[in-house]
Length: 269
Image (cartoon, rainbow, N blue to C red; front, side, top):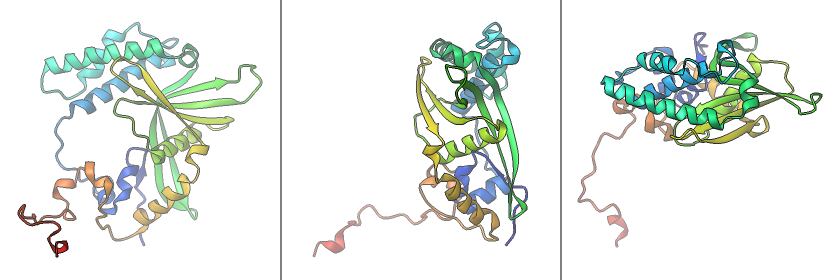
């Protein structure tokens, strides 16, 4: 068996490990199919960048909106758009959403923001040998002390979500692991998923360490199979639906079925 010493595992790449072929092709060989500009992805990247600037303590006490207009132009200038009109429409939409989010956010959380867009990277070993590198970016890290000032101190990893709510406990586990590795020594660790709608209103989901109990063993078992094996078979499943390799994957059924054939003809007798 061969260990892939360059393998990187992150909350976003973890879904690729459900298929050995997909992970090896995309994450090891780096053979990504051509990808057109995706407006929703560009919007999300810019939104995260802008939120990071607003809540970054180095820019002043959060939330700091002094340079919001300039920051928004900078964030969207770096994204791919088919037209300037589409770019500016998304920029203004982002500003409305973020302004709504700021208005709804807890001021104590804003003031107690430790870090934003915080990158964590740690080598993970197996039997004393390199196994993979765990890495990821925490959107925002907040510290919460007990009201009395003498109780346990909790560190929160807040993850901004702009799509339709769908919780992935494996990704949540990975985020919590990154949070603990990046900010060791706290009494409690929480992951907060902020599902933000068009008006900046938040449907917040809190994931505790208890919620992800058992995920570590399940994920590590799968990673051993994917990272330590020499073969990289295609493994069809639900994860195929949004796979970038889906169109050219040989595991897909290529023979069509004639529409005139009764699917249950053999049961008619």
